[in-house]
Length: 361
Image (cartoon, rainbow, N blue to C red; front, side, top):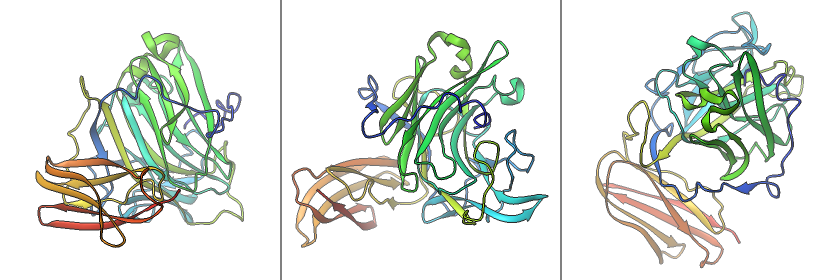
């Protein structure tokens, strides 16, 4: 994010998500293991996962906000993280917002890093989901490396993905854009190994960059990185807010997850163990033909996950057996069902909850 005000403007190339993007090749056969996540289901922001950048010094981009650690700018609500930009005088700046990071708390080398996010689209707003090398304090930027999973400015109908790094004293930037309605939820992700970094939107690849053998000075991308979520206001790239910018405005983050290949997993910090039973809303919803149901178990339990129609008739049993504590994803395929409303019910120990899903042909 730090350099996009100047570096990406000359290299951006619009890709239509529906036509120009192709599925990731060679990765679908891998067995991914969830090694860390924050589902934002706790009572407050988890300080074992996140710390804050504080201040209003422009952050290298002539930004206008003052980043705070106040609940007015970052809070949890209904299982989501809300990052809220406000128009207010604070610390000598005219706006406030928040920038959360996992620096020195949760760092990762390689894997699939993803978040499900819904963004505002307004003049002067610059939300982002990105990673920086954890050695930034020692080597500085851009030698630490930067991976921009997603950045969006203003009201443009696309977002940016890319990377920045240093090579023999030179800053190198590579990136592109992909089209989507950012005001709706999407899964923004990278898949990163010793050979390449691939950028994806809703599981569809739109960009790759080779880092094999640290070619072109990419050695920093073989070291630990930390995750950042923020929403800047103003700056050299988006320009300033205007009278049409609705304050306060919010960036919604449903979850952040990190997966690594099941063998040779390397990460800092323990895997996720929820503190309570939870059944999440399926995604996508409405769906056609399949959707994912996610639930959380704080302890080992016998789990039954079933699907019913509106008359109470049994449609499918997706899970029936003992499962370990953690977060679990189950795929439900409705290709042989008629369009309409269905219900899924989770029973785990004494916990019972039912939610609705909608199949639309």
